Amino acid sequence: MKNKKKLTRSEIMSRVRSKNTKPELSLRKSLYKLGMRYRVNAKDIVGKPDIYIRKYKLAIFVDSDFWHGRLYLQGKRIPKTNKEYWISKLEKNIRRDKYVTNTLKADGWLVLRYWKSDINQNIDKVTSEIIGVYKRFKELK
Image 1 (spheres, rainbow, N blue to C red):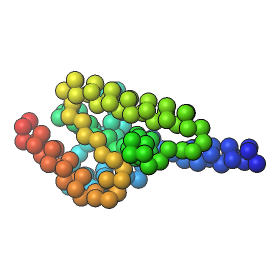
Image 2 (tube, rainbow, N blue to C red):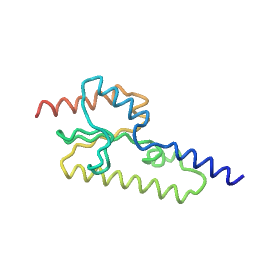
Image 3 (cartoon, one colour):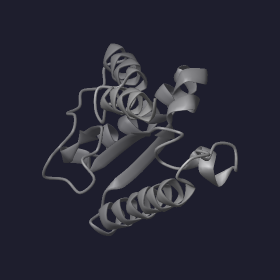
């Protein structure tokens, strides 16, 4: 039975995607409809922003509530098995996100981070906020 559990866990984990997630795709589609043009998943930019505009040094990240620690910080969802591993993993992810944000800001980038749940609950609010920033950049250049 234990092997079956491991196989099931492995199957579940193999389905977790790092790019082109549903919230990411819906946000990109919404932004594109409103005239925003962007690039995705830059390998040469620290943190590989989900959406970016190099010309304006604008980096947008779509963070999963679980993997990036929102639920952990709220004390809502900590896996019951192998707690030490998961707590360590989530804390490393949180530290990495802070490092990426600080590194990009130090290099002159504007970094916007959105939680998956916020995008799912109110994509119009998130989209209008990003479009507002985008339009201000366009006016300045």
